[in-house]
Image (cartoon, rainbow, N blue to C red; front, side, top):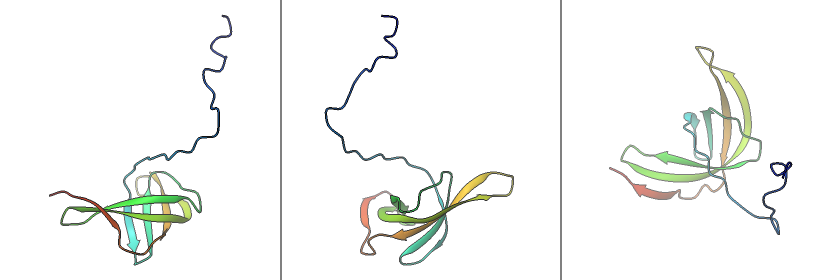
Length: 102
């Protein structure tokens, strides 16, 4: 019983596939039909696939699949560090509207 904390508690019988959903607010600096530049609190790796949720002024929320082109740290006024992410829209078709909140 002395080493019970070091003993494995579980093991996967086969590799598992999963999706991890972490949310964070971003500030959109620039946008076009197929590219966006945002300021985020966390960095992203080049090629990482993300889902950007956008809220329109009429309350509709849409999800746009994007891919990270570049991520670089920036220092804002006051000394806080953010990351400028250049994002490419993966599917330039119609964004998926999730809900309408009014």
